[in-house]
Image 1 (cartoon, rainbow, N blue to C red):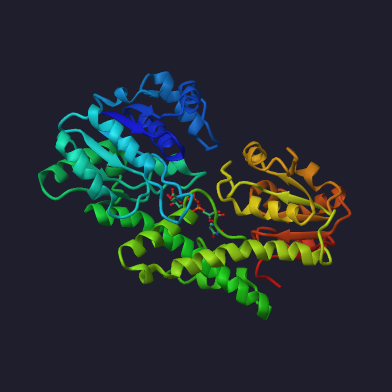
Image 2 (cartoon, rainbow, N blue to C red):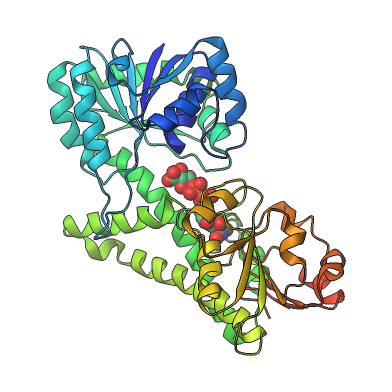
Length: 436
Ligand code: UGA
């Protein structure tokens, strides 16, 4: 099938390349010339395992191309809209400027029978409003939310857990769902759940999923706060409750909390939308989820300061990690960098290292020092602080090795990713999050 993908950020670039990889002919469209130039050369504009390979293959096969010209969308049967919906500068709601602009620019290029498939994370009610503009062209709007995780984006796009299509009632909606089934033919062939529903449900599935994940993380972080005043160990607590299949262990990783380009802004936008709908109290707990999350960053900083005897002034602190999570170079709302910046603000000599995110971090926080190599960051540090649980720090950094690099013997594990006993046995004072 011929497809267009409007917006070539994390979502769109991966979607375009993944759709080409399953045999479609795809044009990716974005207003950012630099991004398009890179993608056209087969260069992934961000770190995402597997993306580089499918980009190169797609371009070489002639099935994948990129342009800034919206006119290139004409002739495609399905147009995916995957532009960003960041948090508004002066509030919690989502900024819909890019979605509205993308749809407005696309409309003159639509033909009757085309499908416009919204993938951006939007406030519930958006699709119904956009449909009023799309339907008069003879095209059909569907809402087809995306659930990809950064670091696993290619896999999640090619082989998702489930597919959701919000369609209008009637034959146009049924036809649109059938066309989406054709688009996602490999997943349909392997019986991946394909949920056909209305617009509002499809939009809500996305924000509800992210709200649930954020709540799960903040729940365990709240337990960490209780563990801290009772001497309990939150990681053992998580293991124990996680054995209950109804609860499950995933996303019960207590630490410095969630960040990134999705969960933080999505729960805020959801709360703001619920207020607009007169149901603010229904998701009032999301403000608490947000507050718990932000407190964990304070706690990590407090642990480092207390461990250093009450002040980090002029102390050398090695910060392991900058990305908001491993397998990503994304630093948007990164708890890791936030902790680094706060320590720097308290007068510490902070050296940040990260396998993928240093370039991005340096651009936004030039005031911090950076080391390309993990060992260079640790060398002569008074304290080592793990904030992104890359394997390079979690599994592949024996405490004995760290001991050869510095005489500092304080380690703060912001992700509860280290083997506390091993670090203690090597002579380090270990501090976890919500652990004795
Ligand atoms: C999230 C969702 O997981 C995806 O399903 C969704 O499609 C995506 O947002 C989106 O809306 O586009 P992502 O932002 O890539 O994906 O990251 P997650 O893997 O969800 O991690 C989010 C944050 O939570 C990270 O900072 C991570 O370190 C933190 N986290 C995760 C914890 O603190 N503890 C955990 O147990 C798990």
